[in-house]
Picture 1: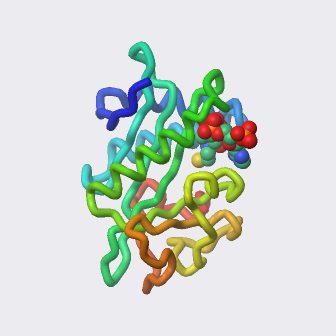
Picture 2: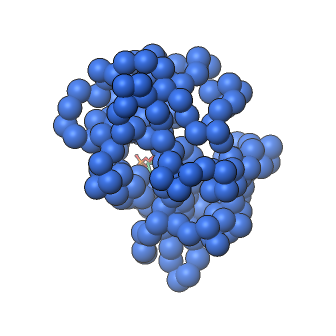
Picture 3: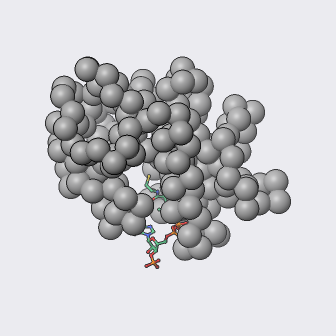
Length: 176
Ligand SMILES: CC(C)(COP(=O)(O)OP(=O)(O)OC[C@H]1O[C@@H](n2cnc3c(N)ncnc32)[C@H](O)[C@@H]1OP(=O)(O)O)[C@@H](O)C(=O)NCCC(=O)NCCS
């Protein structure tokens, strides 16, 4: 299996992967919604604000993950991990955790110091996330227990001032 940064020409295959995965996990409407989110992340964001990685086997994409910038004032190099998907036929083999760790290493190498995510603490705690203060979320959250963070520089996860701004693809209170 090869883990690589994704390319814009792969957008249709990546959207299909997210549609299939989230459709299987949470129903067709969610599949469509997340695929739309991925399309927007890939098409509408400045390249320095979004990083996507895929896991490939025999030329096919079996998993994908996106990180998008969270802008704090004063500035902190922070990203949101979301969404991540492993094709249903390949789940439970460690690919999700491997891809997340790979992405975190790449982000760290580019100088990012904080990563946040919004999901199941039982899963994300396996890859270093702990509960984050709600003031570091860009919107009021419907599931506050799912707001999680980690420091990539060994510093304190939480000491950040101000409400961050997310990229346009996530700029919708319904998402949160
Ligand atoms: C969540 C997901 C990315 C994990 O990838 P994966 O390759 O299946 O996970 P791994 O093999 O690395 O890890 C598997 C472990 O995580 C656990 N796990 C998987 N999804 C979980 C979830 N949503 N909540 C809690 N634990 C979860 C599994 O039970 C398994 O635990 P075990 O090792 O004790 O059996 C993948 O299952 C997926 O794409 N799910 C549907 C989409 C989704 O929910 N994405 C995340 C939200 S953005």
